[in-house]
Length: 122
Image 1 (cartoon, rainbow, N blue to C red):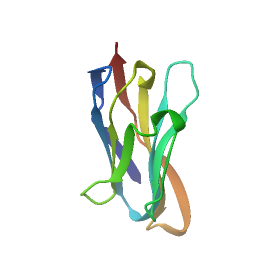
Image 2: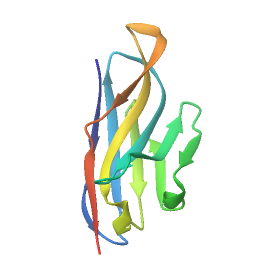
Image 3: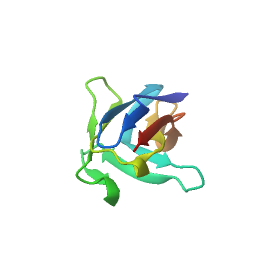
Image 4: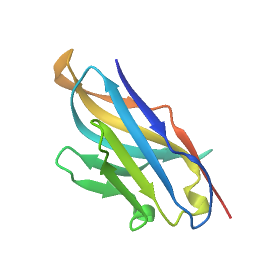
Protein backbone atom coordinates (compact mmCIF):
# COMPACT_ATOMS: atom_id res chain seq x y z
CA UNK A 1 0.00 0.00 0.00
CA UNK A 2 2.90 2.32 0.79
CA UNK A 3 6.00 2.26 -1.35
CA UNK A 4 9.41 3.83 -0.82
CA UNK A 5 11.73 4.37 -3.77
CA UNK A 6 15.39 5.32 -3.34
CA UNK A 7 17.64 6.84 -5.96
CA UNK A 8 21.04 8.47 -6.26
CA UNK A 9 23.39 5.62 -5.45
CA UNK A 10 26.45 4.87 -7.50
CA UNK A 11 30.21 4.67 -7.60
CA UNK A 12 32.35 7.52 -6.30
CA UNK A 13 35.97 8.02 -5.32
CA UNK A 14 36.97 8.53 -1.71
CA UNK A 15 36.47 12.13 -0.71
CA UNK A 16 33.65 12.60 -3.18
CA UNK A 17 29.96 13.21 -2.65
CA UNK A 18 26.64 11.61 -3.43
CA UNK A 19 23.08 12.68 -2.79
CA UNK A 20 20.39 10.09 -2.12
CA UNK A 21 16.67 10.67 -2.29
CA UNK A 22 13.69 8.69 -1.10
CA UNK A 23 10.08 9.22 -2.12
CA UNK A 24 7.15 7.66 -0.30
CA UNK A 25 3.86 7.12 -2.08
CA UNK A 26 0.55 5.38 -1.50
CA UNK A 27 -2.28 5.72 0.97
CA UNK A 28 -0.35 7.97 3.33
CA UNK A 29 -2.12 9.96 5.99
CA UNK A 30 1.02 11.15 7.74
CA UNK A 31 4.66 10.20 8.21
CA UNK A 32 6.11 10.27 11.70
CA UNK A 33 9.72 9.97 10.61
CA UNK A 34 11.89 8.96 7.68
CA UNK A 35 15.46 7.81 7.72
CA UNK A 36 18.31 5.97 6.12
CA UNK A 37 19.91 2.68 7.09
CA UNK A 38 22.78 0.86 5.44
CA UNK A 39 24.01 -2.70 5.28
CA UNK A 40 27.37 -3.94 4.09
CA UNK A 41 27.91 -7.61 3.15
CA UNK A 42 28.21 -9.80 6.23
CA UNK A 43 27.27 -6.97 8.58
CA UNK A 44 24.12 -5.93 10.38
CA UNK A 45 21.94 -3.16 9.08
CA UNK A 46 22.66 0.07 10.94
CA UNK A 47 21.06 3.46 11.29
CA UNK A 48 22.68 6.22 9.26
CA UNK A 49 20.36 9.16 9.87
CA UNK A 50 16.74 9.89 10.71
CA UNK A 51 14.53 12.97 10.64
CA UNK A 52 11.27 13.19 12.59
CA UNK A 53 8.03 15.00 11.96
CA UNK A 54 9.30 17.69 14.32
CA UNK A 55 12.53 18.00 12.29
CA UNK A 56 14.71 16.43 14.95
CA UNK A 57 17.67 14.62 13.42
CA UNK A 58 19.96 11.85 14.61
CA UNK A 59 23.10 10.48 13.01
CA UNK A 60 25.33 7.49 13.39
CA UNK A 61 28.59 8.64 14.95
CA UNK A 62 30.80 7.81 11.98
CA UNK A 63 28.81 10.02 9.59
CA UNK A 64 28.39 13.07 11.81
CA UNK A 65 29.78 16.15 10.12
CA UNK A 66 29.82 14.44 6.73
CA UNK A 67 26.19 13.46 6.05
CA UNK A 68 23.10 15.64 6.21
CA UNK A 69 19.51 14.43 6.19
CA UNK A 70 16.76 16.82 5.15
CA UNK A 71 13.24 16.98 3.77
CA UNK A 72 12.91 17.28 0.03
CA UNK A 73 10.83 19.83 -1.83
CA UNK A 74 8.33 17.19 -2.92
CA UNK A 75 5.99 15.92 -0.24
CA UNK A 76 6.96 12.72 1.56
CA UNK A 77 10.51 12.95 0.31
CA UNK A 78 13.76 12.78 2.26
CA UNK A 79 17.30 13.50 1.10
CA UNK A 80 20.69 12.35 2.31
CA UNK A 81 23.65 14.47 1.28
CA UNK A 82 26.86 12.50 1.72
CA UNK A 83 30.17 14.34 1.63
CA UNK A 84 33.76 13.26 2.25
CA UNK A 85 32.85 9.68 1.48
CA UNK A 86 35.09 6.89 2.69
CA UNK A 87 35.46 3.29 1.49
CA UNK A 88 33.87 2.14 4.75
CA UNK A 89 30.68 3.94 3.69
CA UNK A 90 30.22 1.32 0.97
CA UNK A 91 26.89 -0.44 1.54
CA UNK A 92 23.34 -0.79 0.33
CA UNK A 93 21.42 2.18 1.65
CA UNK A 94 17.77 1.67 2.60
CA UNK A 95 15.09 4.25 3.19
CA UNK A 96 12.69 3.63 6.07
CA UNK A 97 9.51 5.41 7.07
CA UNK A 98 7.04 5.11 9.91
CA UNK A 99 3.68 5.80 8.27
CA UNK A 100 0.10 6.28 9.36
CA UNK A 101 -2.08 5.17 6.46
CA UNK A 102 -5.56 6.23 5.46
CA UNK A 103 -6.77 2.66 6.02
CA UNK A 104 -5.54 2.53 9.62
CA UNK A 105 -5.34 5.95 11.19
CA UNK A 106 -4.79 4.58 14.70
CA UNK A 107 -1.64 2.66 13.84
CA UNK A 108 1.76 3.39 12.39
CA UNK A 109 3.55 0.91 10.17
CA UNK A 110 7.15 0.58 9.17
CA UNK A 111 8.02 0.52 5.48
CA UNK A 112 11.31 -0.09 3.71
CA UNK A 113 12.58 0.76 0.27
CA UNK A 114 14.38 -1.66 -2.00
CA UNK A 115 17.81 -0.17 -1.36
CA UNK A 116 20.37 1.62 -3.48
CA UNK A 117 24.03 0.66 -3.77
CA UNK A 118 26.72 3.13 -2.73
CA UNK A 119 30.29 2.15 -3.55
CA UNK A 120 33.27 4.28 -2.54
CA UNK A 121 36.59 3.42 -4.14
CA UNK A 122 40.06 4.27 -2.86
